Each structure stands twice: as C-alpha cells, then as structure tokens.
Amino acid sequence: MIRGLVTDAPPGLLPAREQMALSLGWHIILACFGVAFPSMIYAVHRRGIGRDDPVALGLAQRWAKVSAVLFAIGAVSGTVLSFEMGLLWPGLMGRFGDVLGLPFAFEGLSFFVEAIFLGIYLYGWNRMPPRRHLAMLLPMAGAGVVGSFCVVSVNAWMNNPTGFRIVDGQVTDVNPWRAMFNDGVWLQFAHMWVGAFMVVGFIVAGVYAAGMLRGRRDAHHRLGFMVPFVFATVAALAQPLIGHVLGLQAGDRQPSKLAAFELATTTESPSPLRLGGVLIDGKVYGSIDIPRLGSIISRNSFTKPVPGLDTIPADDRPPVNITHLAFQSMVGIGTLLALVAVLFLLARWRGRDLIANRWFLRFAVVAGPLAVLALECGWIATEVGRQPWVVWEVLRTADAASTNNGLWWSYAGAWVVYVGMTVGAVVVLRSMARRWRAGELDLPSPYGPEVATVDRATDESRESRA
Image 1 (cartoon, rainbow, N blue to C red):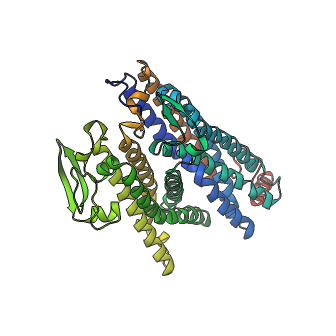
Image 2: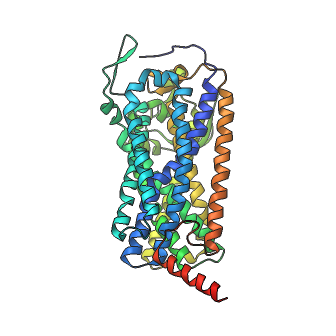
C-alpha cells in the first residue's frame, strides 16, 4: 500500500481541498437537474399529449428552456472540474488514471448525448410528430443518469478500491470495468439518484408554492407544484431506506467513518445513539444519548457494537466533529422531509387539499433549500469521513495533492467563476420568469405548444385592430 509518502502536508493540500469542495458543492446541484428534470418534463409533456392539456405542454416547454440554461452553466462547471482533477490531485490521477479513465470517458459521451437530444427536443416543438417529439426526452434522461452513474462510480471506487494491483509501488493489472462496477457503486448511485429527485422536486415545487403564496393559484401553478412535489415525495420516502443500507455497508468497510458518524469514542455493546454533541480533547460534550439505538440503527442488531475511535490509529481518524454533524444534519433533514411526504400522502388519501394551506406552502418553499443542504451534508460526511484517505487505505490525500504553491490563486479564480455563473443564472432565470408572467409564451424561440401559437396569433390580431 502507498502510505505516508510525505511526512508534512504539501503546500497545495489545503487550497486543493477548498477548491474541490467549492467546485463539487456547486456543480452537484446542477448535476441533480440533469438527472431528475428530464423525467419531470416527460411527465408533464406526456400528460399534455394524452389529455390534450395546453397547461401541461406549456410547463414542458418552459421547464425545457430552464433545463437548457442550467445545462449550459453545468457544462462550464463540469469542464472546470475535469481540469481540477489533474491540477489539484496529480498524485491520484498520475497513479490511477488508467483505472479511472473508463467512467470519465463514458461521462463525456453521456454529456454530448444529453446535449444533442436536449437541442432536438427544444427545436422539435411543432416540427415533429408529438409522440416522436416526446420520445426525445428518453435518451436525454438516460444520458443524464448514465453520466451521473459514471461520476459516482469514481467516488464509490475511492471508497471501495478494486480493479488493480500494486506491485513494487506501481499500479498494474488494471481492470477498468471491475473498477467502474465496484462493490459499492450501486448503493451509492441509488442514494445519489434518489437524492437528485428530492432536490429538483422540492426546488421546482417551491418556486410554484411561492407563486401560490402570492395569489397565483391558477392551473399552471397547481400543476407546476404537484408534479415535482410528487416526484420529491416518493424520493423522500425511499431515501431513508437506501441510506440505511448504505450506512450498514460503510460500517462494515470503513469503521473509522462509522465511529465518526456515531461519535463513538469507545466500543460499547450495545451502543447508544448520540444526537448532536462535539468531541473536545477526547470527550463528548452536549450530546443526547439514547441507549441501544446506535446498535439497532447502524448495525441492525440489538447488541452489535459500533467500533470506537480508540480502535483506530490516531493518524487514520477523520475529522470527527465535521463528519458527525454533517451526517446527523443529513439524516435529520431527510427524516423531516420524509415525514412531510407521509403527511402529504395521508392528506391526499383523505381527500384534503394541502395546497390550500398557507403553512404547508411555506414549508414547501423551504423544502428546496433544505434538500440542497441535506445533499451537501451527505457529500461532506462521505468525503470528510473517508479522510485521511483519498483512496481508502491505498493512497492518502496528502500524497495525492499538488505541491504547487500557487493554488490559492486558482482557488480565488474558481470563486470568481462560480459567483459569476450564479449571478448570471439568477439574472437569466428571473428575466425568463418575468416575461412568462407578462404573457410572452415563446420568449425569442419559434417553437412551443400549439396553444401558444393560437394565443399569439390572437394577440397580434387584436393589436392590428387597435
């Protein structure tokens, strides 16, 4: 194994970590839209065709244009990330480039497929037969899922390294397919895939909930709220189950991460569940301990212990407080969203319309940012909890980082790029929303549902008579 190749942290380690956290934390939100948004567009477009519903077709058109804006911005941030992998982590890519090349190549191909079919779909309004036009969303959605799978497979490989051997310090006998389809990839991808539907569903539903709170309770806003909220509701109910199984797997393979998750300083049988708390000088302060529940939740046993941090060498322990608080924040927010999903389904089953309840709409507005926070906390827990390894028990993060003294300039440049793209996205999307509310159905594009063409012709006729 490649251990401890450097005794002191290289000068590029801290800026590399900071820049990677910024880039991944920003890009992952856009990646969620690439995974989940095409399915929601497909749902409303299919409804529009099947029920001859102009409202649903109008939503499909608008959402596709929003998707195009987010896709363009995501292309920039994704390109930045591809350069950062080599710039910031030459020790990783230099040693394991042959192992990781296959999923990155497939991710690039998926990006182009998604871009091609998004363009065809946008251009195809009133230019293609309705069913064929609708079918253009299927490869677009599939490409988003495949691209996400490829990226997640790389991270899963970092947690479950396989598909190679190290002989005399050299990586050899590379099997890229085995590396890509490693033992942890399916559960980790399922967790990310379902999380993407939670993020996108709650964010999009929150936009329409905010509109309804301002008095816009027309069919457009009701349908625009219901479709993504139903997607998010199903995802919120499935996510705790997937996360539980994934947590069991992490406990078996990465005991130090589980110990940090549970803030277990010593091995106890049965282990308590510690809510909150921080570790200071080896002692836990401020936690609420629930006896036995730690073993039940994290080990699926009434007596099986959570391994304590005292069983882990000091140099191999992750930053405990960050890992613990991020993990519990993710679980807490996910549980809250799941409870609201149950409440929503029960209300629908009993025939109650929660959309009429202003408190429910207020929570729906907040649910989007909460889902984003849970996603970010989940990735923090996963990545920080794996430290000090970039490849679990094979390559330390300090050995993978760049020795370049100028990476702080790169980090500053990344901030400029991401702040600029954030401002640009907000300005463009708000401008689109204002013009839609003013009745400009097409924006500048010549395509749209048939009802838009009819309405536009009617407006032009009225103007000419005036």
